Length: 55
Image 1 (cartoon, helix red, strand yellow):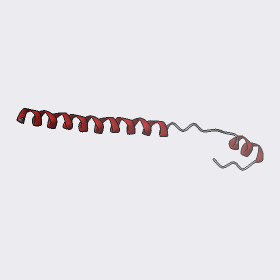
Image 2 (cartoon, rainbow, N blue to C red; image 1 turned 30 degrees about the horizontal axis):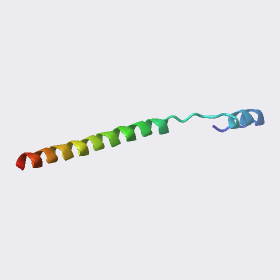
Image 3 (cartoon, rainbow, N blue to C red; image 1 turned 180 degrees about the horizontal axis):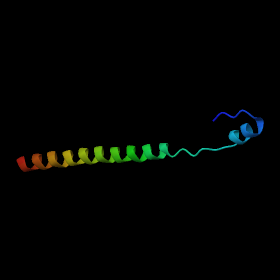
Image 4 (cartoon, helix red, strand yellow; image 1 turned 60 degrees about the vertical axis):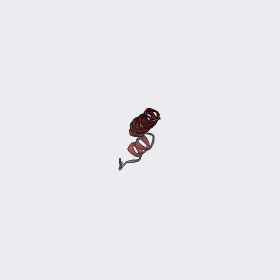
């Protein structure tokens, strides 16, 4: 935000903005990692089961 007078400019420079968008993307990343891991494990167990059924 741009302020034209000094008093307002000082108030604006002292503001802190909390950014929560980074936290939300982290949650989405962990959900994606969990889904991919679950698919890999399921594929492994299915292939192992098929192999053991063959023997």
